[in-house]
Amino acid sequence: MKTKRYSTEQIICILKEGDSGMPVKDLCRKYGISDATIYNWKSKYGNMSVSEAQRLKELEDENRRLKRLVADQALDIQMLKEINSKKW
Image 1 (cartoon, rainbow, N blue to C red):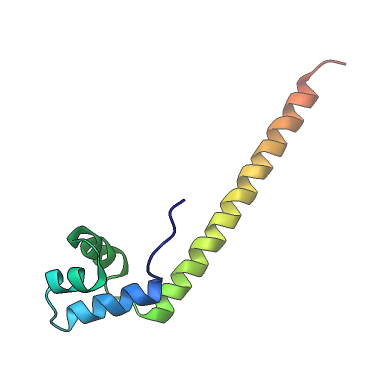
Image 2: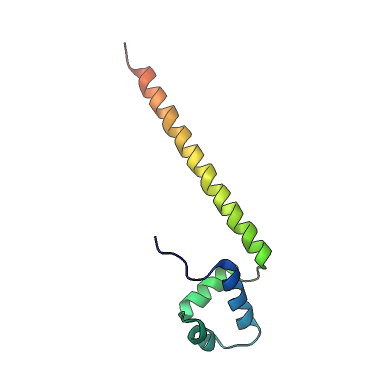
C-alpha cells in the first residue's frame, strides 16, 4: 500500500493556506501536488480543524477493528453451523 506523503494536519494547513487567498495553482506548485488532489482534500477535510481530523482518524481505526471482529465472529458461527449440520 502506498504511504501518504502528507499527514492529516499538514493537509489541513495546506487547505487553510488556500482559503486565505493563495491560488490553487500556486499551492500545487509549492507542495508538488495536482489540482485534483487539492479538490479531493477539500471534499474530505473541507472545514475541519486539526482536532476534528484526529478524532475522525480515531473513529475510522475503531470502525476498522470492529468490522474485523464482526467478520471473525461470522466465520466462527458459520464453521460451528457446518460442524453441527454433519451427521456423526
